Length: 538
Image (cartoon, rainbow, N blue to C red; front, side, top):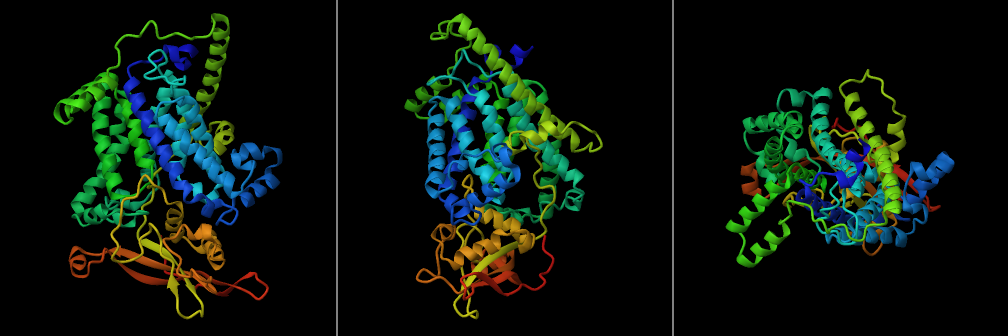
């Protein structure tokens, strides 16, 4: 039984094209994640960043002692200087390129996993997104799912182990199904009265210009999308457990749905990862037929031959595709050890994810949680739940500097809505973590979101790494004497208002969000003005 589940030599060969597509897509997603961090990591967690990794790891070491390396599994224990942070991201980026080119994929995906985990484990609030957990879980499982060898090609003699294939599909299923469950279990009235999507496009973290137009569609459309979301997440995805035809129907429904989400909201690589996992629903024959249809209808003759050669997977195994295997005795012992290790690790993940799913609707069910807590630091067996409660307004934090505490100049953001006439753009899969975190911070207060006053301190120093997170520095010559953060409420303009003014947004100032900071005579930061009571915002 263990060999049937965990040994790749006994694995299914019907998914080789789907595996090839998924691995190329996952490599591209890793590339986008590391590429995004190359421009942000120093400002986020560098020595002079907003949340320095050194400060966080020192606190972990003080509290956890010898368990520090398990609690925070990161290469940044070696060093937290800017050069090492950047080197780790470059290593991950290079590994993602090699994985995309199908060069030693299993090793390269492991390197990608370690490098990305290193950031997530040391970044605190800047790595608290569910999408990070999704990528780490899929990335870790891929270390078992990807074929071995330097240049494996289709790796016909090394199909994926059944357990690794199932757990990747299980992750895909849970992302949807658990998100549907939390919508019902949260008690949010908007999901019950079908108004959840009425202002969703406006209030999402980073809206797009397509979302602006969709927002202006009538209520019946948004009510239909609300019901459709619940039906898809709680119903359609159950087709995973049916026949190949059922899986194909499921794929044909969820794929355009995810494309719609990508076009109407910037959720970094989240939706791209879900799309990539979806290709594992399809078997070789379906994908071959699709590729041939594309060849006949859309591609010029030279490209037809290239694509045809790529998808021409043999139907029977090649008996000569076993050259270079180790001797029987050594190979048998190594294989037994590998299967045993896979059984323990993948079985552990299967238990954790199943237990967490059961505990969502049945909180009174008592299941051992020690295995779950033990793996928490690695983010490889997660519980998901997207949009459990819909935000009821759009709020934006804006940093402002001044030399006289009277005239204030705003710091322009790279990605967040700010200028009223600036069209919302599509950035995904690029992930601007600073802008994202400010969206979450705007829904609470500054005392719960210390990244805001910490950013103010860095702006008072004119720190170049943090200033790279902004579009430009209005105090390029000398740093400001005072920095504050204010809170605005934003709305999409109406179609008529946009036609008249050219503005995509309108806004209203709600008040000061955090204390006004300055440097005292002793060089220490001091608060010279405190925020008043802000209107309720959530």
